[in-house]
Length: 421
Image 1 (cartoon, helix red, strand yellow):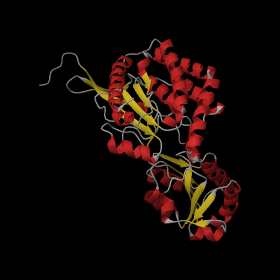
Image 2 (tube, helix red, strand yellow):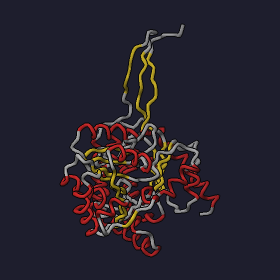
Image 3 (cartoon, one colour):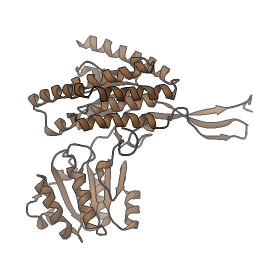
Image 4 (tube, helix red, strand yellow):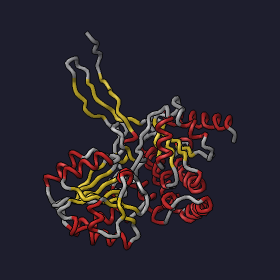
């Protein structure tokens, strides 16, 4: 497909999506839920086909020499398929936000003014690896009454198209047009350039992938973007922390999965408990093959730790590498997070209620946690059914973006013949 054909193809996709979005604004909840449950059933029934398609993608990725973090995100397991199914069923079980009216009040003129929740319209989603995004994004957009244009990466083309077949089955079963969810069939990068500039057809863009992809979309898009650029997540172990609890949380936050944006990349430890907690915790990390890079105080406690550079505090490793810093106070921990964090997810471990409250108020991130692992920061764990991405911007959607993040509000005015005097 040459560049002229790409433009023609994408314009046709855009027109179909805009038409479908107008139709979706009037679709009843029962029809949307029928589509979701049918998609879930189709994914469950076609598990072997999805795994086979994913194997084809993985073999190609290995041949091309993709890094371990991307391979991890690309891999679809039976558990991953079960999670896709569960996510779709959870979305179906959620209340439909569309049409919800709030803040309806009478004005002195006699009119009533309120707000109604409505779909965004057409959502363009550009993502790398992660084939589960195809199902998650389709499910959320359907329930939120949007049309969607999904452009997955070339590395997941076979699995994405296999999932797209299941999505189409669900749309047909609910008597909804298949162009409600369109999965771009070409791997040509020119399609991305077209998608992010089609402001007459697309209302919002959601990029999910590496820093390079998200930066490109942010720099070049002519359409509003819901995004996060980095996932430099911190766990701060306060001097008022329970040691056993701290070790479980800090271990899980780093080693449960390395290649995700909510994985801890920097561990902060208060100096009063550093000599108690770092030796046993770092032994766990080293036994699991995690490379440790620390400040001078940390290196003095753990011999097998390399000295960290300034750049380490700013790095999202997405790998078994961890930065460690001993801080002199709670305030210094807050300052470190403010200077080096990415406003994604940060957690404090403490039994001190006042410090926990301060951490929640003062840390300027999209998810702020007390006494738990940063790995919980996703839509599935938050009860959103699934997520379309994570936003660290201060717009209508922040944190994991679920149903509500794919809607907006408009003012509605109800009158009975009133005129302005």
